[in-house]
Image: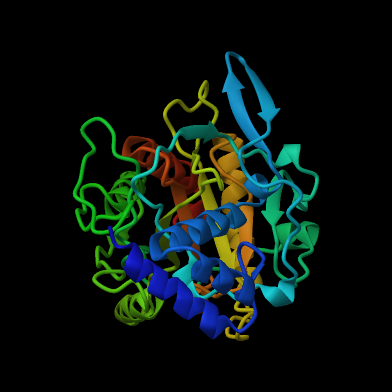
Length: 372
């Protein structure tokens, strides 16, 4: 159990933030008071719960789509009710706040959910593609849907690069998918973390005729802090060595939980896509530091891929999420962050999602890369 280390990291973030703690909409002073009032483990656990609920607008609004027989019904979750969205100016996004691991030693139940934006009218959309936008950036979805997608790869050689900024992220252990944890819901065992998911995705792309490079570096181990700095250097080196790379996918897994300790796994429709996690495309705007003025090009690619996914495997994709960080996407207009499942999913569900994602998007990518 490494909650003392996590508590120190969270406390450092609170002091450095000097204001509102973004994802849960909690002020720095309130969170610091919470930590001071509780023991180190209890304080970190409480803050983790509030952050993770804050990551999901769907959980924040107290909605979840669950399956009961053949019918799907909206039911209330254990999450907080009537929690307002934080103001855009109150949402800094230091990488250390993303996907904080779940605490151990508590009785957790896993609830399956299919996130369907049609149940929430707050999502702007165009052509069946929905966007969750907590930034201050204005997005004309209809206009962007008409924009051509232009990728920067040139010449012959590798066309797709798969990397993992948080390579040790892993899934709920089940069946034969057991592993030794480096941290809760994290492992350096590449057979059970998102590196394995990247393997599956790369194999499916290659089978479709695409030239793929898969970097297996554990950028978040032994130190989680600075992972994006290290993965940036990796991507820069690949782009310099292979100018043919037009698409860069940073593959992660999400984390969703309620304040009561319920863990959520995101699943596609079980009738058409059995035992399959959902995926989510994340686009960074660089709003926090102004480093990514061309982020709409990345969003145009995400929208094109999402349309393809919706047409081939409805319910596989969650709404695209726009964020204030840049996630190194300023390095290429073809760069996206792909969240495959959540920490409540099994590895097998994530592998099915990764394989389906690659199979469904490969025809479009072949066209965009000038191969068809």
